[in-house]
Length: 132
Image 1 (tube, rainbow, N blue to C red):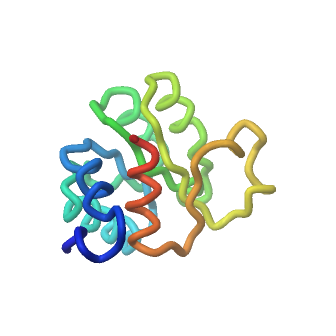
Image 2: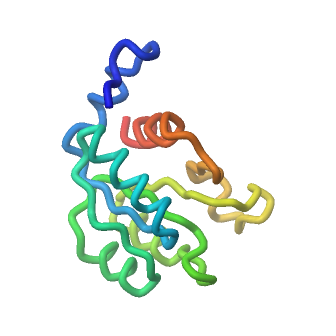
C-alpha cells in the first residue's frame, strides 16, 4: 500500500503512524483482519485483534500501546470499560461504531468516533489525527 502521491498529505499521515503500537479491539473477524492488515501496511505495530471484553480489559490494563481502535459493541457487551481504562492510562483511542452519536453515553460523545462502515483512508486519517 502506497500512501504518498495518492492524496495531499498522505505521506505525512503515514509517517505519523510508523512504529505506532496499536491495540485493536473488534469482534467481527473480517473487520478486525482488515484493520490489522491496513495498520500493519501503514507501519503500525499492531496487537492481534481482541474480540472479547474481558481480554480487551486485560490488554488495556497491561499492554504497552500508543493508541487503540475500539469497537463499542463486542458480542453484545459494551466496551466502554476498556475505553475508561485506556483513558486512565492516557492512551488515546478511536471508537468504531454503527450507532449514531445520539446513542452514545454523554461521556463518550466527544471521543473521536468513526462510523461503520468506513473506508480505509478514513481509518488511517482518524488514527493519524488521534496521535498528532
